[in-house]
Length: 177
Image (cartoon, rainbow, N blue to C red; front, side, top):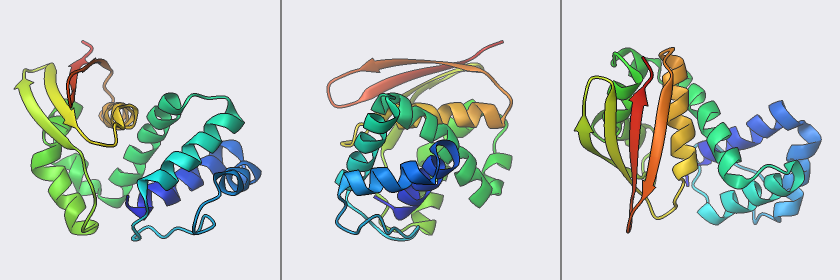
């Protein structure tokens, strides 16, 4: 997993829970590298799981909720690093429906070797899309946070329904009118 996720998670923890909490979860997670991450580095997914587990324990917030909240934060960071991405789309649904066609190829250019999920567009209407999320990491809650972050950036409100299937998760995302 790319180091940007780790560095942003720790920065998010410091900003929202304090430096002592960040230090405590690094210590509790007993990471191989002692919590030293670089944005361009690659790190085992299990290290992220350890950090999230420690944060969940210390904050009394369940991991899926932490992932969703962090996903919203991460979207803001990704857009600040690549502001042109937002301006290429007219709405959050337009952006979300083009993740695999436009956004993930750009991410791969910036972070070669990034292990990204697949987002297969099933249906696209004016105010609704259906998209399949495929990932062995099952970070659906993180994906939901990213989608919510996208909606916020376009000043839109969305409803997300999630249906778990065999090997993938189907999201139905609808913009509130």
